[in-house]
Length: 230
Image (cartoon, rainbow, N blue to C red):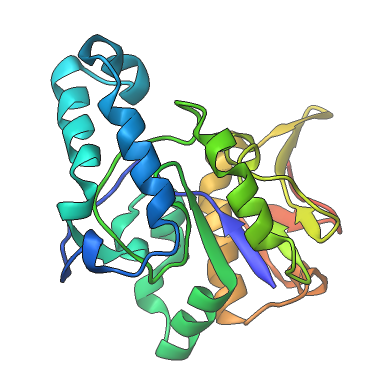
């Protein structure tokens, strides 16, 4: 069984492991080399549209990505610093719980495709929805997930485009009902998602039948989705 979760926009600069990415045995290295080659073909005037920030910052991110194999690593769970990751609270896990999470969770990534929490990765910035990266990773990720007995998809839509969901996939969404109208929880669902991951790991949940024990900020499991009524 595998859970799929998104990366975060925020990333730490930590280099907790003095190993360069080129010296790891990352399984998708050849695919990353293809992406780096693609990056080298991009004109500087196009960088702001890819990285979504100023020219100066875009150029810095671009050079960082191009030099990714010479960069020092940290575990992916240390690299991501967004709301989901603050709320899942990796530091609170026992060694057994950390092992459980590393075994059962995949984190999607525009540059790395799919990593586990303890995969060694450098600092980078590259979204899944640029340069057709979702298409680049689709066959690779689909092939990796196809033989799992169950895949619980906790991804936002932008990352769901990076693989073809088979019959073994259960997509879980977070919604809010306000004045009778149901809408996606969006940004407000990130904290809930992180808290759900914490609950899953702490309780070693390997069946959605056990989701009904989780509640946070009014969100409850209704058998298909997590929903909050205002």
